[in-house]
Length: 186
Image (tube, rainbow, N blue to C red; front, side):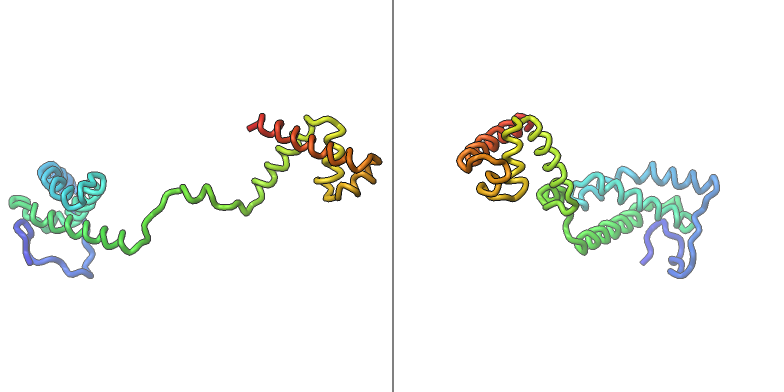
């Protein structure tokens, strides 16, 4: 199928097209761009559903293809039908390419994924160790003897040499004090 402005038949697909790179070719493509950019853009904006950025990309690709084929055009005739056909095919190809891939998602889900690298645990340990330094020595000792050493209250009482009831009350107040310190730090 031949379009106005297209000289002769299209070259075979196996033939390598070499764009005209001389000053005449540059002037011709600049004129082509000046003359057809706006009408082509308005046509393509409708085909892309109002996505102006996508339409701009399609126009650029269309002009690139026109530049590659510049030596086949009769620049005296209107090239808009040829350019519109090429642009429409680019839009169709882009739609097919987009529908073949799964839809892109944002980074929102990544924030809630569990950390595998252990950085969160390390930061938590540093924060708790820092907070323990602000507790009284008695509270710090009782937490070290029980929770941090994985001992029962009876075992901690034996290690610390104090009654079991005292260990229980110190653990209770030490945890409350630790919670206050951690809340102050945010």
